[in-house]
Amino acid sequence: MIETRGLIGAIEATDVMLKTANVSLVKSEKIGGALVSVYIEGDVGAVKTSVDAGIEGANKVGDVVAHHIIPHPDEEIERFLKGRESYKKSPTNKKHQSKSKSKSKTSSTVKKRKVMKKDE
Image (cartoon, rainbow, N blue to C red; front, top):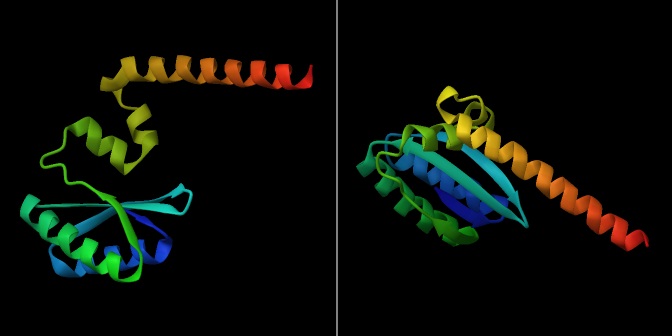
């Protein structure tokens, strides 16, 4: 994973990573506040080489905010990284589903309370 400030740095990092070693692009994600994350996968050595090259390339045209390599990620992490929908639908992840549902109810309740206070 590489996170950059700005899209151009993310594009450069992705281009360099894919050309450096035998890795695949999992996804890129615009986080907000000009942050963009890029996720790749492949053999641990290839990913390490690619991320190092991607950092160097991105720093030439932008700013790398963070980077991280997870060797042999857990199956749940892989589903999470590839897309939140597949993570939510995972049959082995029922306890996480109920927590996220109750959490969203709580946060919407808190938001309503704040709005009511502002109107008073």
